[in-house]
Length: 146
Image 1 (spheres, rainbow, N blue to C red):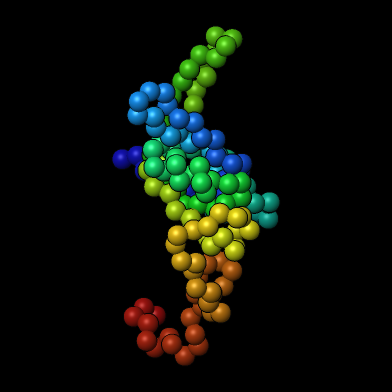
Image 2: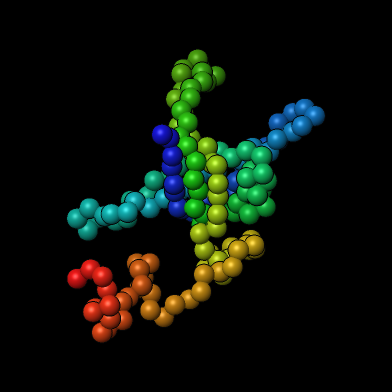
C-alpha cells in the first residue's frame, strides 16, 4: 500500500501548467512545509518541505486557491522517478501525487485572501492549543475508561 497524508502550508503559489493538445489537462506543482510532530531535546521545530504534484480538477482548484501560506490537508501517494539533467547526470525525484486536498483552516485563520466553500470550524472555548478538547471537571465517572 502506498498512502500519504500531509498537513502543511504551501511555500509559494502553486505553479500551474497545461498539457498540449485537444484535451489539455492542468498540472500543479507545489511544495508543502510540514512541521514534524515531535521536537528533540528542546530543539527548534523541524520542518520538511515536501514536493507535490496534482492533475486535473485538483490542479485547477490549486490554480484558484493554492497561495503561499495557505494550510491544506493532502492525501495521495509517493511516486519516485529520475531524469538526466542538461549535464547528463541522473537526477532522482520523489513527489507526492495528490489524490485529494482540503483546506485545513478558515481563510480568517490563515490570513490569505482565498475563499473556501467549506464552513469554518466553530471556535471552542474549551479547546487547548494542541487541538484536543479539555474534559470538564466532574465528568470522570461518565467516561468508560478510568
